[in-house]
Image (tube, rainbow, N blue to C red; front, top):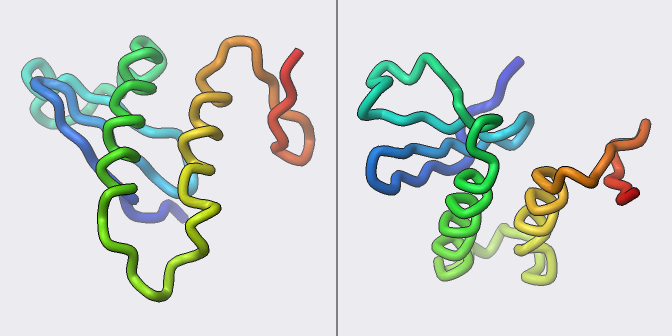
Length: 99
């Protein structure tokens, strides 16, 4: 079962959607208004830049009391940087290993 979108950012014609349970999706909404073709794999650097923009904005928001401690807030940024690094590999436990 897929979960809902965790966050979305739009820059120009590009729209990035972040999910808690699967990789982000990237669409060029000028060419694909219905968002049928995910082009995230084709533009990994753009995905990374848009993720950073989204996380920087989220980091500036006032934190609800129920959220985790602040020490965990940039974990997603670091994880996505490693995910999109071509020199990374996931092991059986989904831990990222550099080789």
